[in-house]
Length: 148
Image 1 (cartoon, rainbow, N blue to C red):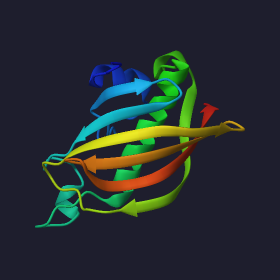
Image 2: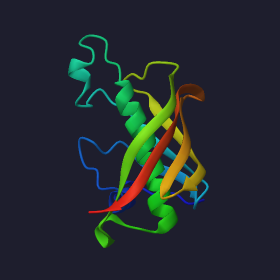
Image 3: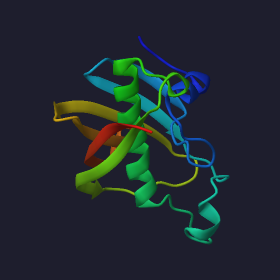
Image 4: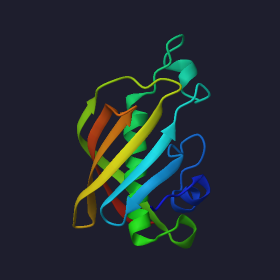
């Protein structure tokens, strides 16, 4: 099993608090798939305003969770660590986004990302978030790598 803790994730993603949205990688296979976790707590900085008295994780951040998991798949596949390179993975689009249940404090998001194809420098990944094995959010994530 190829797992990574938060310290190893920080080596591969440029994101930091409050925008680092992956807590652990459970498993991955280079150029194939990755499974990660995001633990959602009441201490998330967006909950006081979304929504007061009824905290719900914004859908756009669920998409970002899937995008970060996909970027990790790419970085791990290429073995490119953030500090070793000027390469950054840019999110360029999404398709077929579906929200099936709200995400609330206490939920643990399991993110499964599968590489569908690579074409002309673009990565296309299918992504699904589940909570307690119940489908929550899904989409196709598209991104590319650029030198900065």
